[in-house]
Length: 415
Image (cartoon, rainbow, N blue to C red; front, side, top):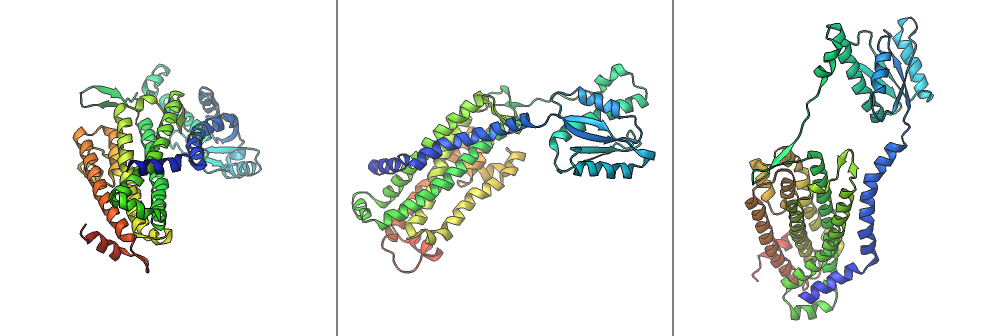
């Protein structure tokens, strides 16, 4: 079996496609993190925004509030409201936005203190950069105006406007509380889960193709005379999985490097401290067991079929076992320690994603993590026996394409 593992491993790691994809994925990950920062730096720091303020009272306060902000992207200019005709002023502002004389415009009401509504106009419905500057500035102007109306002294404005300094701490099994950044941990979890998803998608398909090709070669008869069919299937899957683990090891090292550089995505930072021994070790175990589990399922399908076209009806349900837990991640995110999340994460096909998500978010009891590994290992053993049986029977099959009845009938046959 070791010779089979070695052959399958070397066949893949020596290809140009393997080398290119191994190097390309970390580069793409770095680009995903670096490009948003470069884009933010290249954005015009002075988006010209017009303000329609019928009362004429708030422009100076709003401009001062904007000026006090760091990394400002807005240059505010007052727009005339002739005779108090807000509709005409708004129409004129929209013309200027359409002609690109203005990047955007804000309309506030006469009684902004009593009815604090602001309407933003721009050619883009998002305008997040401008909104992120304007909205807190408007909130600040509103608070100050209301404080002034009710006679609150200026010295109390900062005190009354202070926000809560929120900090999240995670209590481990030892009772020690450590700081956890939910956003950063979730970013890490999603990154590692997507790596698992891609590996199952890519190498699972490779396993399927390799088994079908093995069936069509004359070498298979010689191999089956030397090793049992179940060991042949296991050797092929482990060899292909070893190539996948090589890539994952390189990609994980790249994540460590990027974490050390303090890169971030969407304001969520990659911090090497999130990669605790428990998280990193769990990822490696879940990746290995998850890959073996799904690859065994793909190998079983390939063992029964003679062409890729015949295998598609059987391969599609396998992918559903990857897609469904990704759809259920919301349940785990909301309550990682709930009974429902616990039960779902112990289902062998769901464990690589849902249990690993729980490890990242809530540090579940160790026995639950170990139990999920045991259940996955038992399922892998059953799948390897089933794949070997399907391979042994599939070699002798000819004629019509296999169906689900053929699959069930073959699995029910005695060894």
